[in-house]
Image (cartoon, rainbow, N blue to C red; front, side, top):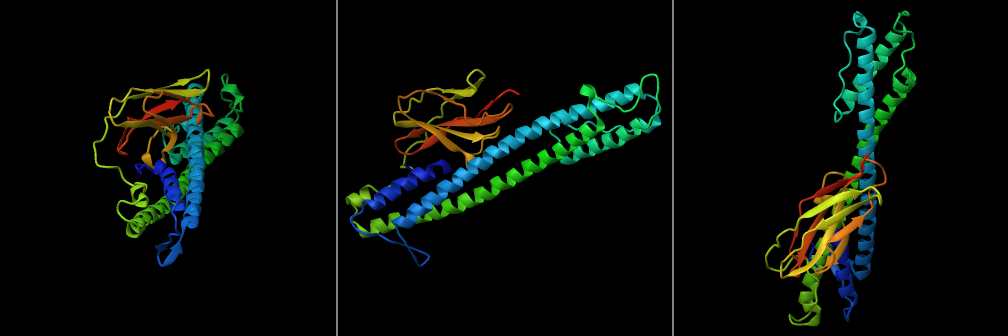
Length: 320
């Protein structure tokens, strides 16, 4: 199996480790003038596996933070709009309230929301200081008897949701860098291992002929298949189907996923590998723990040569 994506590193490292362990003699590599043996390689593989697990956790946290932020922005925006409507209705000619805050777009950033909500809190104090009229008696309450204090709590929740989304994004970025550094080291060592085996053994030896590959064999890139997906609310899962590949060199289909609505190869992980002739469907409940959460998928056609092609990305979202 060649390395075609970040998802391939662990299984390819397993192939190299198995090859290394089955040699009839001890083989040690020279990594920057330091001896590196198969035990060290196994430890590196374990380190990468742990970092990849941590990255997946951070990606899941990032998606939860995205959904939480999206939902609270909707709530906050609706409350700002409701406040403005009440003021226009109850104080149509009062000059104190002729500068109402703009209602932030539901995808706006922190500054737009916090600024609008701070304006609402200031105006709310002014409203509550107004004398009784035939249509108004302080304190102002919005729908559901929402008080100014509760709106202030909502403002703090909006601020916290933006902070959490930013913090989880930084954790993702930092862990990606850590993973990439380990993978770069692993790739360099696997290349060095291949060179060492080819230097130690004859060209037609079992040791050389069974060396794991790092890149695909010469050949064509397959045509991608079409992937589709829907959310099943009864079983709380994504139901995925794809068309059949007719490539004569088809080896398998590999379904990969990324938490969230945006697919990036940097973050993809393998859900399942299905041999040629196997099922063209797969169901998964992973990633749909809260309403509004999404998972993006691609299915890859993989050939016996190691060449592959991915479908268009499909995003499945759990309804709010």
